[in-house]
Amino acid sequence: MKLEVEINDDSTVITLPDGQGRLVVANPDKAIDTTVNLYLKDGKLAGIDDSSAAKVADGLVRIEPAWDQEADYLAKSFSEYAVEKGVFKKDPLPAIKIPGSQRATIEKFRDMILTVLNGLGFRSLTIPKKKFKGKPRHKFTKQVSQIPFHVDHDGAKATVYWQKRNEMLIKAGAVMKPQPDLNKDGSVGFSAKFALKLRSEHTDSFQNFVTTKDIVLKSVNEVGLFLYFAGTNSWLVLKDDDGKSIDEWTVVKE
Image (cartoon, rainbow, N blue to C red; front, side):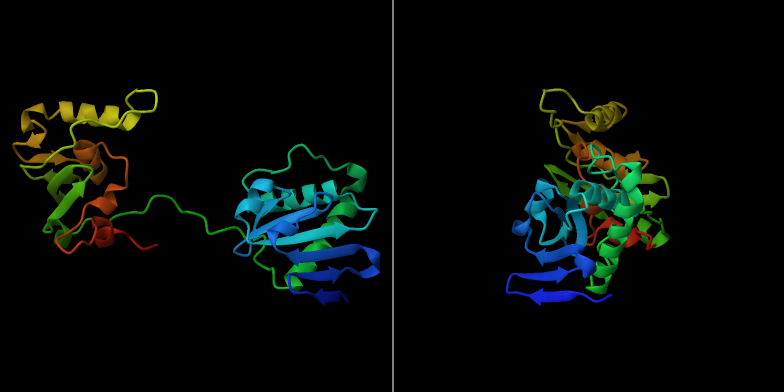
C-alpha cells in the first residue's frame, strides 16, 4: 500500500490511496466533530469520539474518511472492534447502529485503517492493558511465624504475629481505633458492622480500646477490621522492624 505522508511540527498527515480520505496524528485538541477521533493514552486506545477521554489523552488519530463513508458508522465499527479485543468492557457508542447493507464496506475500510496504523507503529493501539488476575496469594511459613509485625495506622498501634496458617495473634497492649468512620448519610458501613461484631466477640479482652490480653483472629483482614475498621489493604499496613510489609514477606509471585 502506497501512502502520501506529510510531517508538520504539530501533526502528521497520511493521505490514503484512491481518494479514500486521510489520517491525522496530532495532539488531542486537534479533534474535529465531523471526523472519527481515536484518543490515545500511553499508546493505547482510550476513547472514541469521547470528550471525557480527550481530557486525559496524550495523543489523537483523526480519521477523515471520503464523502461516501459515514463517520458515525466508522466510529461504531471501531468501538465494536475495541470491545471484541477487550480494550473496552462495553460499547462506548451504544446509540449508533450500522445498517446491514453498509457493514461489510465499513469494516473493510476500518481494517485498512488498522493496517495503516500498524505500519505506522501503533501496533499496541488495540491491545488491552494487562488484566488483573485477582487477589494475590500469600504463603505462610515457619520463618514468617517468628517475625513481629507492627501496626501504626489511623490511631491504631499493635504488634501482630502470623503464628499459624489461620491464626493471627494480636499481642496485649494493642491500641484500637475507638469508633468507625461513618458513611456520608451517617450510617455505619458494611465493613464497620462486621468489625463491631468482631469486637463484640472479644469484649473481655480489651478495656478503653486497649487490649488487656492476647487476641487470636483468623486473618490479616480480620486484624485490620478489629484494630482500625479496615478501609485499606492491611497486607501493606503490617510491617516488620525494618519496614518490610507482611505482603512483601509472603506474597506468591505468579
